[in-house]
Length: 284
Ligand code: A3P
Image 1 (tube, rainbow, N blue to C red):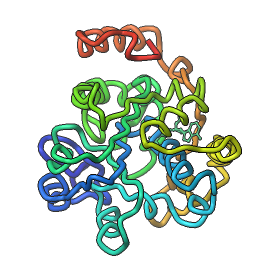
Image 2: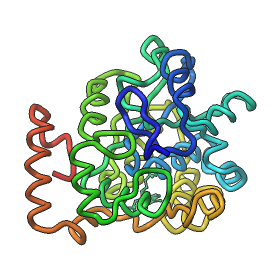
Image 3: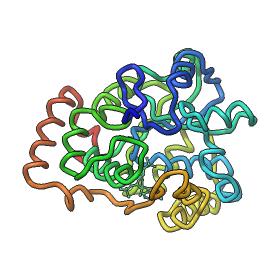
Image 4: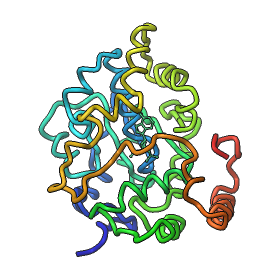
């Protein structure tokens, strides 16, 4: 068995992804004007943002996030299971995707649909990804962090290169229907990020509603919510299960990179992200 499902030169996880579905999503999936889509490179805080936007949409009422698994209420458009729910259910208020810019459904580019793109320090994305994937059989498993480190820098990990993902999506900067957020800003001032999202979506929350959103998106609340913490994915579905809410902090890479790795990463970052203002990246 191959280590990945390859599509257009990008490695996708082996389970839950099919070439036909990826082809269909990319070319034929119809994004509607009223759609809101969260787009991220994996391990950037996708599920945190999904919970946040879902709770904004429900005005802080947690029933929606406590009664339905995240993959059913906010389908991942490029996955087998996401497409299953999109076909069988009514259109949900929120969609998710990890697709790189050049593979995103073509219909989006003629629509008024809104994309919220969340980025995170790629060093933390790397560490989070290593621990998340390493024991699963979803992707090619790295025997050590240093192996995964090498693969990550070359883009030989699920969803390909972080640098290409970011470069592609940052080309949407300045578009009316595109909101750029970061995991770091969300950690630093969660309330302010919620307010930004509300402005972008044209939603107004009363202060008690905003407090309810804050309460239900805390690391602790999400870790205890079985509809959001991936504990419904049992060992017989994916060996060793998947721990989504691991640490939930910024800068954990410092506990894992050697000095040489930190320097090598800096060098690649400077090369690949040349031309972008450093202040765009709150972790730099
Ligand atoms: P760590 O592995 O560094 O802990 P994604 O949803 O894109 O897969 O991202 C997962 C990362 O987001 C994990 O990072 C996870 O802990 C973090 N995360 C999820 N919910 C969070 C929350 N409520 N607060 C802070 N971090 C959260």
